[in-house]
Length: 364
Ligand SMILES: [Zn+2]
Image (cartoon, rainbow, N blue to C red; front, top):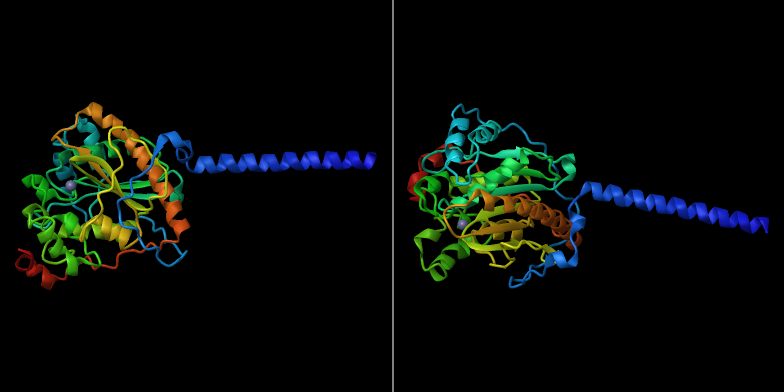
C-alpha cells in the first residue's frame, strides 16, 4: 500500500517536471520568433504553383557562415547630402529631420557607384535584437528607376526599423538604380534592365534569346551585352556576397501582387492589398539568380500602379514588413528541411582598372 503511494507520488512529480520543461521550451521558442506562430490556417493562402518544379539539390547541411558587418565603406563626405536630397524627393510626407537621421546612418561600398553618373548606391543596416539568430534580410528598391512608390515603401521600412528592435537583421538599399531614377527610366543610365543583367547560369545561352522572343527586343528589357556587366548589378552582388542574406525582398511596381521564388510549401500569410501570384523568373533576373542558382529565396513585392503613394497607404506596408519577416523565417526552415544548398555567388564584382577604361566601349 505504502509502496504504491510512493509510486503515484513519484509519477505525479515526474509529470509536473515534464510539463514544466515543455512549457519553458514553448515560451523560449516563441520568444525567439514572435509572429511566426501567430498564423492560423485561415490567415494563410495557398500560393498558386505555376512555377517549374525545382530540382532538389544535394543535401549539404553546412549553412553559410554569418559574418559580422565589416567597415568596407568609402568615406564620402557628400554621401549623406546626396542621400538627403534623394530621399526628400520620395512621396509619402516623410519628415526632413527623420530623413537626415536615417541618411546619417547610411554607408556605401567602394564598388557601389552607378554605371554612368557614378552616384553612390547607399545602404542602411539594422541588426536583429537576437544577434545572429535572426534571419538576414536584404531589401532592394528602385531597381527600375521609374518605380517611385517602391522607394517610398523602402524608406518607410527604414523609418520603422530605426524605431524598433526587429527580430531579423535588415539591410535596405532604397535606390539600387540612381541613374534610372534621375532619368525616370526602367533601365539604368546605360540602357540595361538590371533585373535581366544578373549573371544567371543560363545567361550566355538564353538572355538574348528570351529578350528577342518574349520581350520582343523591348528597349526597356535589354539584358546588357554580358551578364553582370552593370555597376548596379555588381553592387547588389557585392552586397549579397558580404551580407549573405537568408532572404531577399525586391520591391517593384505596378502589377499589384506578391511573387515568390522560394520553397512554396510554406503557409503564405494573407495581405489583403496584394495577392500571392507566381510570375516565374527569367534569364538574368534576381529570382533566377538567387533562388534557382544559389538557393536563397526571393520575394518580389509588386505594388499597384501609380506614381505616388500616400502616407496612409504606406502604413499598411508596416504589416507587409512583418509578414515578409515571417515568410523569411518559414522559408529558412523549409530550405533546411528540403536540404537545399545555399551558396554565395562567386562572381567577381571588382572591375580591374584596365577593363574600367574600356567599360564604356564594351557595354554601350
Ligand atoms: Zn520593376
